[in-house]
Image 1 (tube, rainbow, N blue to C red):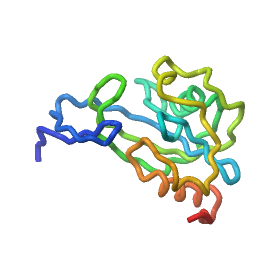
Image 2 (cartoon, one colour; image 1 turned 45 degrees about the vertical axis):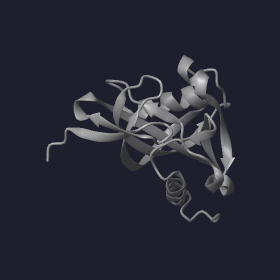
Image 3 (cartoon, helix red, strand yellow; image 1 turned 180 degrees about the vertical axis):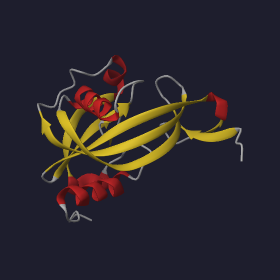
Length: 169
């Protein structure tokens, strides 16, 4: 089946009919980083997302992940394992590009450094806030800006990382 149109969403989940030839592929990588009973999340507008972002041409996925986490949080991490690959069709709030994004989620370990905003680019300075170690018992109450079931993904990653289920409902 040869599609001519696809449905894309914007940051508010409003749906748009977009011509397939207008889409740009955008591989992206995201980190799930735990510290005891907390997870590292980046502030975005009035909600959260996992630290990460777009992969540059010629950049290894793990190098992109290390760079993105450092830019968005000030922390250095060690990518451990891919735990989910997903895709999303969305319209970038910044560039207005219509994107077919391939999202790759990694469990990461060994966070080092101090959380900071000093590596934000000009666009991130407009919408992002300082990353936080968020208590896992609060994850169901959070608003996430991404195209996955964030709570389910966090619980899955936690079980892989720690070897047992997350005790919070």
